[in-house]
Figure 1 (cartoon, helix red, strand yellow):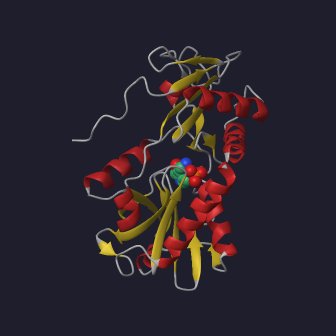
Figure 2 (cartoon, helix red, strand yellow; figure 1 turned 90 degrees about the vertical axis):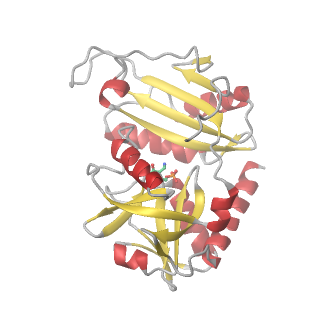
Length: 291
Ligand code: PMP
C-alpha cells in the first residue's frame, strides 16, 4: 500500500489573494478547472526557503495562459512577490510551490464565461523528496503510447494521460513512463528525457509535442559548459534503447539515471559518469543560486 502523504496542516494556500490553511481553502464546484480542466499550472522547487528559477516558471505560466487565452490577473512581479511571501509564511525549507490558474467559477458551459474572474491558487508543501537510493541506483522506466493532445507545450492541468501512464509505470515496478509517438520518444509524465550516445547528449526538440522543461534547459546548458555536444532532435526509441546513458530531468525529480527501459538494461545497467557529472553540476548551480 502506498502511504498517504503529509498531514493536512503542513503547508499553506494562497487563494485569490488570501492566505489560508488547506482545510479552510475552498474553491467552487463550478470552477472550470474542476469541470473542464480549463487551466494551467506550474511547480517550483524551493531550496533552503528560496524558490529556484521562479521567474522562468512564472514566464512559462504566462505563456501557457496566453496560449489558452486566459489573462493573468497579476503581473509577474506581483505573482513573484505573492509566491515569495507565501513561501516565507509557510516556513518550509525544502518545499514545492504549486501555482494554478483556471478560468474561474461559472455555470457549466463550454463557452468562455463572460465577466468571470479567474481562480488563482498557490500552495506550498514539503517537497516529495526522491528517495536517495533511486538517485544512487537509478530508475526503471516503462514506454507507453503517447495518447495526449497536440499541444503538450502548454502546461495544462488536463493531466489524465500523464496520470494513467504514471500509474501503469508504477504497477510495472517502474518509476516513470516515457511517452512514445510514431516511434519517437517524447518525454516522461513529468520529466524530459536525454540520451547519451557516446558522442552527444540528445533530447527531443521542444516543439508542440513536449513541454519545454526548465530543468531541461539547465541540463543542456550545463552539458555544453562541461564540453559535451548536445543535440535537440528526433529521438527514436531504438536510439534510446541503445544509448550508453539515459537521464530524465524535471523540477521535483531533478536528474535521475535510467538504468532499464521496459526491463532491458541501459548501458551497464547502472548510473553512468555523464549522469553523475551533470547531477553534481546541477546541485552546484542550485547551491550558488539559493545562497
Ligand atoms: N514534461 C512534462 C510533461 C512535465 O509535466 C514536466 C514537469 N513540469 C517536465 C517535462 C519537466 O519540466 P520542468 O523541468 O520545468 O519541471
